[in-house]
Amino acid sequence: MLTPQWLDALRARITLSAVVGRSVRLQKAGREFRACCPFHDEKSPSFYINDAKGFYHCFGCQAHGDAIRWLTDHQGLAFMDAVKELAAEAGMELPAPDPRAAKSAERRASLSDVTEAAQRWFEDNLSAPIGTNAREYLAKRGISDASARAFGFGFAPDQRQTLKAALPFDEALLAEAGMRIAPEDGGEPYDRFRGRLMLPIHDARGRVIAFGGRTLAKDAGGAKYLNSPDTPLFDKGRTLYNLHRAAPAARKAGRIVVVEGYMDVIALAQAGLAEAVAPMGTALTEHQLELLWRQADCPILCFDGDAAGQRAAMKAIERALPILKPGLSLGIVRLPAGLDPDDLVRERGAAALEALLSRPQPLAEALWEFERDAGPISTPEAKAGLKARLLDHVGTIGHPDIRALYRRELLERFSALAFPPRYARVFGREARRGEQARTSAPAVIDRLQQLAKGGARDGFGLAVLSGLARHPGEISRHEEALIHLARAEPALGPAIDALLALSETLDSPAPSPISGAIGLPALPDRNLYAFLIEGNSPDLVREDLAEAVSLLVEKPALKAAKAAATARFDRDPEGSMAEQGRLRAREMALDERIKRLGRKRAASPRDDSSRSPSPGAMTAQATD
Image 1 (cartoon, one colour):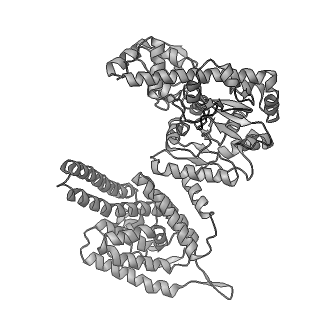
Image 2 (cartoon, one colour):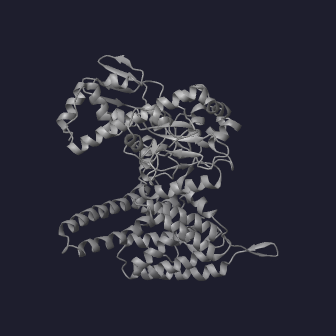
Image 3 (tube, helix red, strand yellow):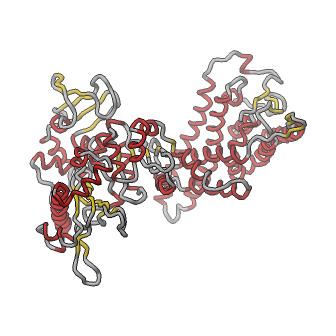
């Protein structure tokens, strides 16, 4: 077990500037060192290292940490790998693990010896006469000699027993390392990789843990690409190809790019894009996504432009949705049909790819387009199916705020598609259904007046519904939220039903038939919210109404959660009390957000006449 005292002793034995100086050019500055920050682009140094205190700090981006943090954040190492590397440098022994862990570590070390030896043998074969065809293939693919050496290309002869004869390890160890296959029927074991161009797969510390092999035979019946199986060293769902090289480049570039295959990674590296990685021939896993988010807040998925590539991108999106966190997302790049990144770079140059990578599509937009384009949506049933799929995706999102925002954005897009503005054309002229709108408007006013006379417990709710009445073009944007609210708060139901009926009569962003001052109930705090003040811009009204509806919907949800937590007190008193405390804190935060929503708008200077408009002077504009 690593105790705080042991970690402090490790930090004391390490000279931080020596660790950082291996990858960053440092300048002496008195008792400290300084440099241009490796975590963000800058022209003048704001990154300082203090060896006496054992920490670094950037006054530009606020990056801060010690030697362990440097290796995890800048080099991309796992915590224990960083500790082991520093301990070896400091000459310190790690606290003794239990015997089983020690035996497992010893076994992994032996397997690592196998993979390292196999890599040296593959490289030797590539440069020997037996590797002529493999070298010709590399040249045909445009892989330079420098890239071949940098990425460790090798060659596995097309024979069944050559690796066994070349490496001085017993059969069991070679099989456990994934280099040999022992048939289940008891037949003679044989080499796994035969007649293939070989690439080593490294862990985050740059150690060879597995291999990928591409067949060179044109008429080969097997898989084009073959990876090592999972071993004690290699877990394909927890490994990203080229991460050990891409992590430092990603921190400097401020992005990391995910492509489908090894050759794409190498093509991008030759084009000057060193921050590319690839999964191990399968869909991105949750663990791989976590690895990516350690390098950049918004990794860019750049999969092939064919149908398979787009399916891979969609699978990655589905894996990401449940684990999205504030500030962490994915960007999606759609390549031209039929091209992969390697093809694009060779045919159109690095600038063409860079142009796409500089404008990645946000995850929510990509999700919408994937589902919208999944099939025809010309019938009501197909549209309902689209909506159901979108809501199914939203339901998988774990973070409540992100889930609410995705729901709103995707439903807004769906409403715009399914319920476009309707026009009746008579003799070439547009005729709006004004009579229907005038019929619906009194119903809204009547319901809101009844709500006010009934002593509405929630003045904020009355204010929000009155705001929607003043700006009916905004009602359809919040249809789903209002339906849920009507179910949760039956007292608001009649007014919400009237608002939704009014929304159905609107044909265009025309002036609303509801006057802001005639008929609607008087609200003592009406000037606290932008949507109740005359003259505010449509964007301001839309922004505040969206936030207000979100807050209004969250209140009954919190109330129901508190009731559920209270109900389970008898069987789980400790958990019930903790949950009630958490929900009370959320309720207080919600109330503060409502107050802040009013305060930020009330602070804008206005003269008395604009704050107290005369009847008839507040005809609201429905904004679409």
